Every structure is written in C-alpha cells, then in structure tokens.
Image (cartoon, rainbow over all chains, first blue to last red; front, side, top):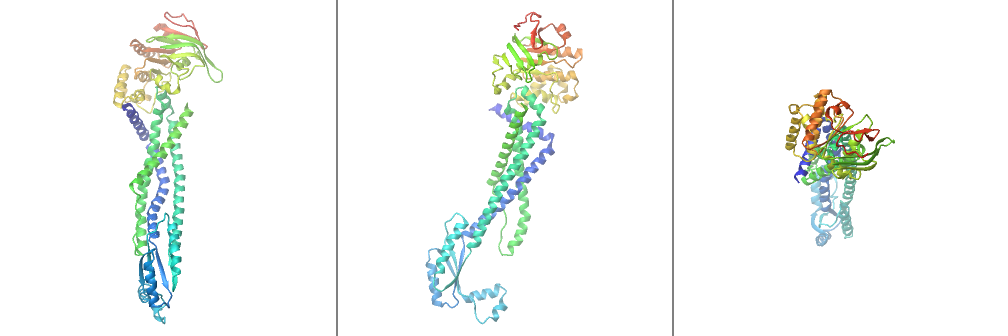
Length: 307
Length: 228
C-alpha cells in the first residue's frame, strides 16, 4: 500500500515538474477545455432554471369560463354551483361583469373607449384553478387540462372556455428541443475536449521520449510511465471544468441584471442561479473522466509506437 | 548468474549479430566483452538486459529465461541490472541528483530515501559536490561517472557497461574502470564491453572475445568458461 502511494506521489510530482517546465502550454490547454465546456454548461444552467418554472406553470394552470352576455343571474349562479361541485376544479373565482368592467377601466388604459359604449360588453366569468394533476410532462398535463375544458364547454349558457395549454405545449416542446441541443453540444464539445487532451498527451509522450526510454531501461513498468501523463489528462479536464463553472457563474451576473429589468415590467421576479453543488461536482467528475479516458487512449497508443 | 547456450540473434534485414554463442558467468565475476565494432558486443549486453530477445538458443539471467520472459516481467528483471551506455543517456532537463534518483523512484523508494541513496552513489563516484548541476555542464568523464552512479544507485547484482570509456582520455578511462572494478570487488557481477585492447592488457581480466558474432579465442584468459 505504501509503495502504491509512493508511486502515485511520484507521478503527481512528475506531473507538477512538467507543468512548471512549460506552464503556458498547459494553461492554454486548460483554457481551451474551459471555453469548450462553458457553452454547454451555460445552456444547462439556463435550462436548469427554466424547467422548474415551466413545470410550475403547467401544473397549476388556470381555465377561464366566460358566460354568455345575456345569461341571467340564476343561470350564472347555477353554473357557479356546478363548477364548485366539479371534481377536477380546486377553486372557483367568480368575476362579475361589472367588476370586470371596473378592472378594465383601471388597468387597461381603455377608460375612454369603454365610456362611449352604450352598455357593459363584458360577460360574467369564472377563473378556475385546477386540481393537482398527475403527469410526467407539461404536454401530458396540458392534454388533461384540454379534456376538462371540453367538459366545461358543454355547460349551459357558457360562451367560451379559455385554457393556457397551447403555450404550455409550445414551451414544453421548446425546452425539449433545447435539452437535446445542449446534450448534443455537450457530446460534441466533450469529444473536442478529448481531442485536446489526446493531442497534448501525444506531444508530451513525444517530447519525453528519452526519459521514457531511460525509465524503461531501469525497470519502469508501463504503469509507472503512464501515470504522470494520466494525471496530467485528468488535471486538464478537471481544471478546465472548474474554470468553466467559474466563467458561467460570472456570466450569470450581467444576465440576471438585464433579466431583472425585464421581469419587473411584468411585476414578477425571476433570476438565474448556478446549478446545485452536486451537479457541479458531477460536471467536474465527468470532465476529469473525459481527461482520463483521452490520456489513457493517447498514452497507450503512443507508448506502443515507441516500443 | 548469466548463462548463454547456443545463442543466435539476427535483426530485421538479415543482419546476424550473434552466431551460436555459449558461455557462463558466475556471480561476482568481472568479465570484458571484446571485439571490433559490429562484432556483437552490444547485442550480447542487450540480450542480458532483455532489451533484445534471442532468435534462438537460451539466455538465462538469474535463472530467468530471457527468450520466454513475459513482457510484463522484463521491468522486474531490469531492476537487478545496472546499465551504463557509451552515450550515457542522461536526462539533461534534470539535475545530477534527479538523474540518479530516477531508478530509485522507479523501484518505489520515497523521495527522501531516493535522495539519500542517490547522494551516496554520487559520493562513490566523486560527484557529490555537483548534485545540483545540470549534466550538460559536466565533462565527458564526469558524465560517465554520473551514468555509473545512476546504474549502481539501486544496488544491482549485475552491472552492464557498453563501451563506457569509448569517448574518454586514457587517464579518465582508467579512473572509470577503477570505479567499475571497485563495485565488482563488493560482489557485483560486472560485464564491460570494449574495443580498447590496451585496457585489456592493463587490467588482465577474463575476456569474451567476439568476432562476426561468434566467440573466438575461448581459452585466451585463465578461468574462462566458454563453450562456443
């Protein structure tokens, strides 16, 4: 065990010695890895923030039920009663046509237009909050909402039923598309990282050819020779990912500033947060793993050529 | 310790380096391998260090058959052998001390222990005061002594020196030979290849003389066990 630890300590020292000899070369390689990782990481961070938001919108949809303008108070009351008794409806908010007109005058900036109308053109309406729905995706939830809306449309004296499922479906499709795009980007740039590390290690093996030959003559095993190169590959992947996470963290600040101004216009607040620690660690681990794989492939291939 | 039996070695392209060479070397012997350039001296040493494998015949080093030795076992055989080359194969991006430490680190010594033993080896060859120097700043004789220090740092049981005095002046060559003989006197089996006949006359050792890949003058030196 002690010998094994000593061998790894030696490999680590050897890697640091090589790093000290050509620091700029290694720093630039790490920078290339970081830049390659920053793009998919930024995409992933944005998606990570948007997906829960979209899910909450989809799982808590509202349906607006508009009565015919000529519906009597009794008919409206009967519909109100029916809606409250419906198993798919969690909450019913009644908006009387007079109340709707008053609100419109206050908020819509249409007071002048409404003033010249002979009467109130707005119908009585109900805003329904739907019972929590089971469903895996926004699209499935939207389908269930559509079914409920179809039932409501059949109620007497109901003029129009409005649901939000269409834009939820579109948002869901967009997020799925972005998910796949980020995944493809990550795979492509992961391959790019492997190519960078592979080439760095190849050059290293070639420049250390004399040292490798001498080490072999004095009884170095292939494991002993390979280890510092593999350490270097892992370090490049890990440090590149670490730098990419820091870059994404910095990029979120200006993004949140401009997003803050945008969301304030809609009287809402929303900001992007960095991905959770565990996912950061997974990202660092994945990048280190790519570095390991590329360096193993490279060092095996090029050591075999030196034989 | 070293056993050659009807060893043939040919390289790609058909060059026949060794032709049916047979001999035995006991532990603690000092043996010179003599012959002109291309006689097969380096090939013979390379076979002992498992750098090359015999085309046919048996090469045994410490009871291990080099011809059938698995590639993964070769490093462990080499850890018993100290190698000194004519061109030294020093690493010029490392200090003198780091060059000598390398074989010790390969065999799993700690950095501290490797430094201590490397200094002891440098002391034996008179280079302790140059431990921080870059090998490129050393003279030819010093570089050869450094190569010897690196070869003996791991306390090998066999020391192989391929033309260790080829590029050295007479006095330096004799000093290098003297160092190698000192190691032989403490029990290390030493094989030295040379084409310098005057050195052989001066030292009067056991000689394996090669010509065109075959041993000649098998009874040239007393005590020689040659069966070529």
